[in-house]
Image 1 (tube, one colour):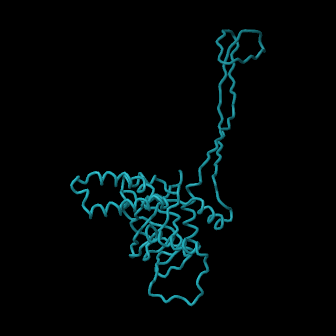
Image 2: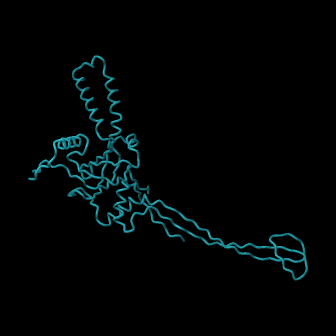
Image 3: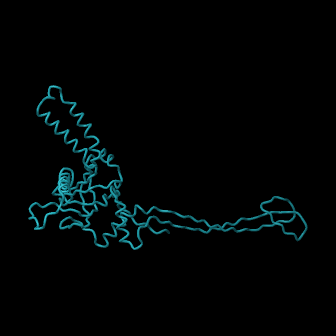
Length: 291
């Protein structure tokens, strides 16, 4: 009797997987390195017996055996022949999609994962849960200009010279130019079940579903509870802290202006001051079977 297979009560549905970074970690956690695939060989020995019959006429003392011949005569004979067979098979398996679960298991077994952002330091590895919001700025940029043109075209002719509307139109067009110059990244925002706010950049090519398809299906907010494995790279800004008595960073004038511009970009489209900054590796949910 074949051994009873263990019951599988849930599976993990991965929406975001940073495979390259997971491979780097797995190479450090597993002494065998990164398994790219494996194969299984099986062999089965079989035997078959064929019965050969025949009858011929001829002189006595002759014993002639032929296969299934129907020649009449006075001499008959039967003989069995046994043949041996070896059936072999080789099965090849793709191990790449085992990497996320293997890394999760090894990180957990070795005590690397924290289950809360409370008290987490920069460089900590956490798994947090919540409802994620995914914003594709590239998609927003592609539709913002045409959308503004359409909206402005809907203003009735008598109202087009309204000073308030003209000022608003000018501001919108200026913002459109700023948006065109902004980076076309994809971002993840999430409020955890403990109430913390998270901001994280999404690396190109790591989503298992096209972000446009996500937007068409969900808008910005994914439904249900999702789990995020990530590295803590920034803590919420604390404006109440007194500045440390350290010398100011020495910049050339141009570089100082560039640093201010980057800070402005972050304020417009990057991590909010009250949010943790995380670098994600996995975003997944659990799917349980009906009982």
